[in-house]
Amino acid sequence: MKRSAPISVILLCALGLGCAGDHTPEGAAAGAAERPNIVLVMTDDQGYGDFGFAGNPVLQTPHLDALAAQSAQVERFYVSPVCTPTRASLMTGRYNYRTRAIDTYIGRAMMEPEEVTIAEMLREAGYATGIFGKWHLGDNYPMRAMDQGFEESLVHRGGGIGQPSDPPGGQGKYTDAVLFRNGTREETTGYCTDVYFDAAFEFMRRAASEGRPFFAYVPTNAPHGPFHDVPEDWLAHYTQTDLTAALADPGQASEQVLDRLARSYAMISNIDDNIGRLTARLETLGLADNTLLVFMVDNGPDRDRYNAGLRGRKGTVFEGGIRSPLLARWPGRLPTGGEPADRIAAHIDIAPTLLDAAGVEPPAGLHLDGRSLLGLLAGRHRRRDLVRPDALPAVPPRQRTDPPPLLRRGRPALQAGPPLAARRRRLERRTCPGALRPRGRSRRKP
Image 1 (spheres, rainbow, N blue to C red):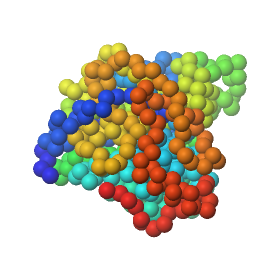
Image 2 (tube, rainbow, N blue to C red):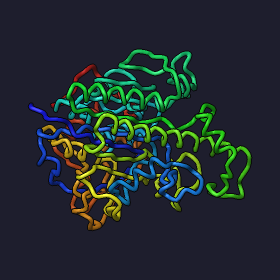
Image 3 (cartoon, helix red, strand yellow):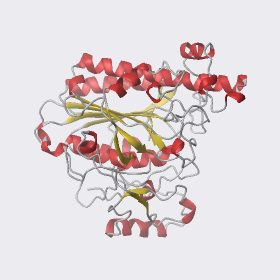
Image 4 (cartoon, rainbow, N blue to C red):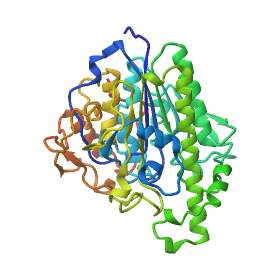
């Protein structure tokens, strides 16, 4: 397939439950003539209120604030209460219950290998694909990121650094972390968030020099704990700052509570520094004017703190646990500084949006639950749709951890066609419904 000079699309995240958009492919008009580069960044445990643009009274995020001012936004963008379900929906455009990635531990954070990921679809269309950070959908073949469409991977194992999945010598090390590049152990130098972005920059530079469109996925494990190893310069700053205004209950301003908040904020401001480095690098590479930049998070904050007036935190289904900002900057393609779109959207809509922007059609017969948000972000579809709960996919009751998803009216929750029926039969044949037992590389991927 012939490709011209790529357009860059950057997507930053932290993510949900609802959904919105238009079924008409907006990016398909460009087709193969304009293959956008895609950079997807998603932070871990950064809440809706952990931004200056969200009114946080003490946290400094100047680069993310600038991005918000330059972006089209969706007002009500939702993610799952915990990270693995969000990541599965993000990668597949499907409700996480279909994917078997329904929790964060005891075998429930492993995505069904037969799921088709956005990385696989874009790679099939000629994209260079890379992931730098947190995967958390399986650490063993055939569930690793490198088995699921990413030709370049630099990741930690499990749900984070400082967990049982840490390799020997790398226990709890955010600084000089022991990571895995394409499946091989690698001892890195520097703070892990900086390392991820540096690796992504090199990946983007190399792909651009080769004239290849690229998909770079940068899911940071910060500001997820543990909190003993955080950027020292920002920790010093927040240790000397009065943080009581950012506490959920200023009456609980103990030394321990304030220290924990200072450490979380230190990691977030370091993320913000890297967003600044990212936008500067795009300028240097001459890609900024051709870049769609989108930001989101994976779930709410891990502790009660300032959350823009929203109730709840990570692990809850209140707004504070499942709401994420969604920022989208694409000069010349999306408006800036206007009123946020008010329709409900979610993580399941991201993969269809990326495919739409790239002018790539999903494989025939693949059912996606999400829809492209390009029209919504462009301001062409702003009417608020009603939502309703609907049935859950037929999975063993012990695997159900989320509430029924919210859906746009007129959009069915399930498609009981042969693909889903076949997956259900495979589930029923497994002797342990709570564990994933992949059988080699028997994947029915188009």
